[in-house]
Image (cartoon, rainbow, N blue to C red; front, top):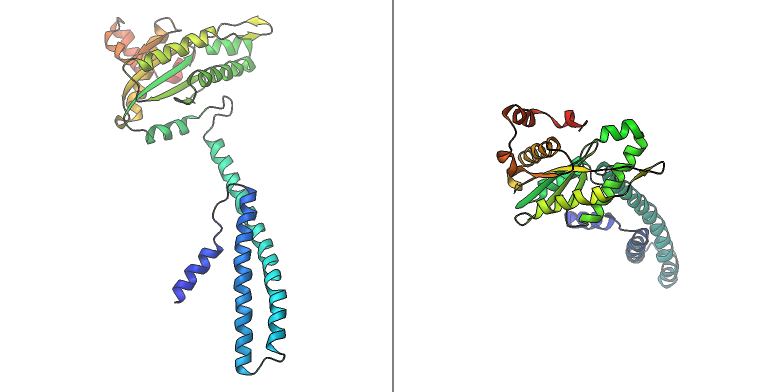
Length: 284
């Protein structure tokens, strides 16, 4: 019996999570009403016990009238205030947690997912996927000649271009300084390659000006495809090497990982392509 009462009390006191402040007030009113009814019943039971023991110093009828007029409204107001205060605190904490979680998963400059969020999304994905890695061409030169503000503006514009072009049909993230990643789920044969080429054309056609002067911005990309169960590292490595081949082949182009075996690069270039880390390619 005690355990049942204990569980019931805990259930009544548990506020849970709230979607809005209105939900807090509604929950507080509902809980306050139940507490008022419970307090009223306890008051009546207490008076009946006092009557049974001969200890009630005034008539039972008058006592019940007073109990009816005072106990429910007083207990309701007190409980309403208490639950509202606690509920609003819980709501504010929940909103703060959501904002913190969003900030921890968002690239603040571009507004896209960051690398952590992108990896989490990939880990939850199952089946056929395609990974597109994109890198802004000659980005270091843009920063050096036009300034870092211009470089930031280019990143923002490219991110907006990706968002507008891909919509909600793909997962898009900024995973490095000027490097972006796109995850497509269940792509058909050459769909990922065509999507990447479309991105390349859209970025090239994007008008960009600094101090009233037109600036050419292009992007290179590498594409790999497989099943997500193979793991992120394998797909990323293939797309990364394809991206480097796109850079080495003249930039402003897209290369699929399957072309790596068909490339006409000599052995020294192939070895360099396979071994050179992304961090050393940022001047490209």
